[in-house]
Length: 410
Image (cartoon, rainbow, N blue to C red; front, side, top):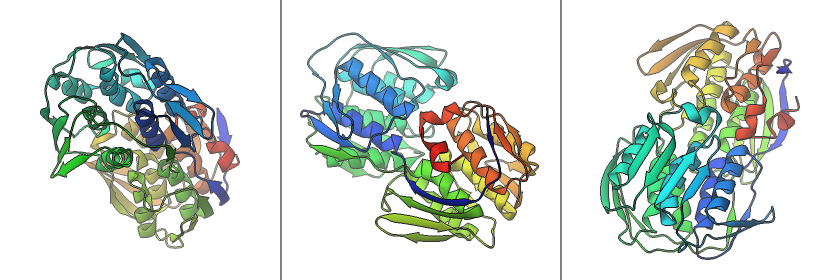
């Protein structure tokens, strides 16, 4: 347990590494044809899980900053058994990339990932002509066979991670892949994958919800610099918007990360935002204006947006809540529990939640459900709390942001 007393923001913070960007760079480097140096990695659990799996497949990692990645010998075929920890992205990408080196793959994980449905991933793997056995739609997955088709249409309503994996695999296949995606959610994250593939020299033809990737292409690059993480930074941005000021460095203003949307929301809330190439400065809103936003492409923002809504003077509306159940926790249910603990009323109406902010919360005991984003958001709520906030478990933040409490100075 961890107790966080009420405080105000006045922080200078270097953004933590984006695990989304880091995992993409690690995969691309590991399946490259040449060694690649990666700058800016950190020790978050999801990044380490990806690294361990790539080592099991055959990559070698030397040093820290930069970390040199010596690629996998893709001609060496063998049975693979991988443990992705709690990383959903590692699961949904390595299920495809492992096919470059094996036709017999077992993927397991741990913690909250064991309880998450993998229906979209399993369906796409079967569409490729593979045999997939699972634990009633959950891990472990046993994948056998070789991809046997070059054109498919996939459902994107469950998100973009598996589709990123499909795109990453395509350039390694002899015939490539023509992929059409229906109703894609979290589209910016697929755009991140495409951007990094382009930077590595992969040719991709983009159409309306379509991606054509020729086969037998090779990755060619020498260095990668990991972006700062807008997902982790969103917590500090909201903390300043509701109570103080923050100076954030290390964030790309032109980033494709979906959670950059937080700037639009806090601007509507009334916070002052100053941006330059080197620093982002956010100052507290005097008005605390209620906001209305859609999180279909950025569901990871939901916990901290709930805290922002609590700080508003009136009713805020968050649309796009239908994708919150299959995360590290059922984030809609958990954040509704949190609202009750905080003494803030709300209503759920179809695909949106209406939160009646009062500018303050009462604090108390918070069950994080071992979800890193719940723990971080609840901590930020201490800036508007009348009492201490007590986290049932704080270690879960290591999944994405190990230095969070150090940066928060609490």
